[in-house]
Length: 101
Image 1 (tube, rainbow, N blue to C red):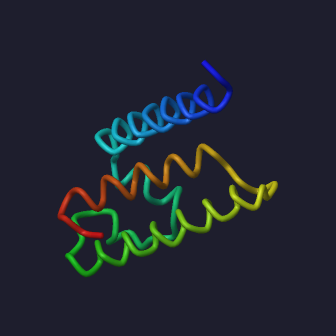
Image 2: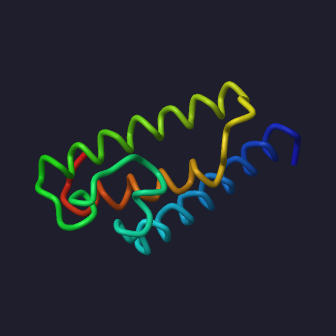
């Protein structure tokens, strides 16, 4: 196997593994426990929020996720892979729960 195919196979394996981690984390997601550590939120956001509040949560998660991606791409010293994964898990859980995006 040449270097190009090895790199592609490695990228595919890493992508598949990351998808599994995000999926598992989304299934174990607990809004009351996880959300306050990721984005600023009001106590009412942690219970069963209205659709509008949930959309606002999803929007804030999307913005935080994009900011974390940008830090990673820019190789910023503040980039945190664990935070990036946690944001992806929360985003997946919040969007799958009610079809929000």
